Amino acid sequence: MKTEVSIAGVTLKNPVTVASGTFGSGMEYDEFFDVSKLGAVTTKGVANVPWPGNPTPRIAETQGGMMNAIGLQNPGIDTFIERDLAFLSKKDTRIIVNVCGRSIEDYVEVVERLADTNADLLEINVSCPNVKEGGIAFGTDPAALAKITKEVKAHAKQPVIMKLSPNVTDIALMAKTAEDAGADAISLINTITGMKIDVERRRFAIANKTAGVSGPAIHPIAVRMVYQAAHAVSVPVIGMGGVATASDALEMMMAGATAVAVGTANFADPTASLKVVEGIEDYMRRHEIEDIGELIGCV
Amino acid sequence: MSKTVIEAKILSQDCIATDIYSMVIEAPSIACEARPGQFLSLYTSDSGKLLPRPISICDADAEAGSIRMVYRIAGEGTRLFSALTAGDTIRVAGPMGNGYTLLDKSAILIGGGIGIPPMLFLAKKLEAKKTIVLGFRDEEFLSDEFAPYGEIVKASDAGNIGFKGTVMDAIREAGVTGEVIYACGPTPMLKAIQTYAAEQGLLAYISLEERMACGIGACLACVCKTKEIDDHSKVNNTRICADGPVFNAGKVVL
Image (cartoon, rainbow over all chains, first blue to last red; front, top):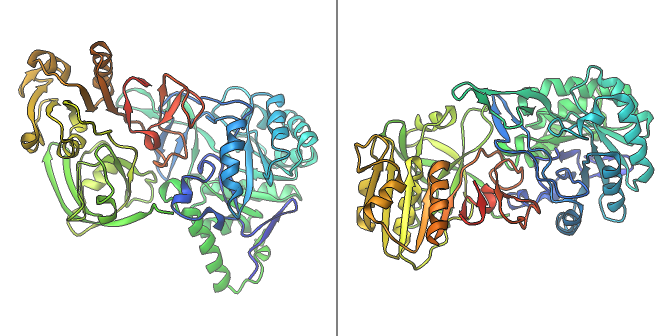
């Protein structure tokens, strides 16, 4: 039974990773299960310098999901390489480093710092809805997306995954734009911008007012967008958005994703991603699937 | 790989005041590790409510293998917990967080509202001389159980229990003294304690609360501002779930 998949020449032992920001760099979850069992660990976004993130409250629960406006708090690339990458290097899993920035120069600086590390893939976050500069500003305008993709590609040693925002009218256009600009893969969806109001206190539930909605509630939207993006490009697609179970992950794959990330579900069960790995294997046995590749885009 | 989410059996559940419940669960692995000031992550049975609820430990009996939590219904998640009865099970992980630093100094324990329960576990474990200050809105709960552990001073907003006013009013009026403060309660109370401790040159440990998502230190949802750059985050922010919930009052900005 072959569960390996390939993203831009990098082989993952199974198609399951985690969504950036929901898993730290894996250290905390490694106390619950050996993160080496995942196809890859995708880290929380890292910038060139430490970022303090947004004021609290940063999260709120919603029906079947949650919303967050963490604001990409991160310790900066120096600490990240020393501490987080050092930890992941001891693990038998692929390392996908999520990169964030306020300007193209910020992204390029991080990408260059990662060149001589053992990061396997770079995921460029152009879709965070919770920071004013950078982030989503690059991910909702095709011209800006093309520009940053080209610049990052020109400086990156590892293959580049562009992480797209669902907060656009035409996701196929954005996927194609990233591919045409040189992206080696794309990942989607980031969170969907939302708002919640605490009626008892007559205040926004989140200090940032708007926040990104995630979790099972958004899964069908993510499946639709993964399908549209996968049919618009020939590079691999990593599907994410409300994946909580193996069935959710298989849906993503059948819609066209080569790999799948488990996100908010990690909060509901720290071993959710491991259960997805095991559930996919179980499905393959039950359906006598020899190679997981048979399932990708099979609908 | 030492942590796990367990399915714990509920041994008892009692309503002890308006919307306040006392739940005892069977969790030997947690009970033998638990320290005062730590909390548990409780998961609801409703798949539409994903996030664990952080609930403080009111008592842990290592011999009996049980953990007691006293909590208030604050929303739909805790309402679901309150409907559980003996024999039911609940998914739980823990103990989480750092807990209080137990010092051999005369102590003032201050609990405000639903910050009172963790003080009971602390009162049992702390061997130093203690004065226990409890603040209520208008309904008393749990205070009898503190009797064996020290002198008790009460305050209430309504004035029907002990001194009328805040716990700080009661401390001043009753002339409570000590070398170290341990506190848990609403943020305005903790802020007042922070100021008081600074004025008096007292050491104070305060337990903070913030909305949490993962509860294990990965997501950075529940942070508190710090005076100095935090060693883990490299910014003036610290993780309440993993580096707290108890902090030296002199180190955090409320």
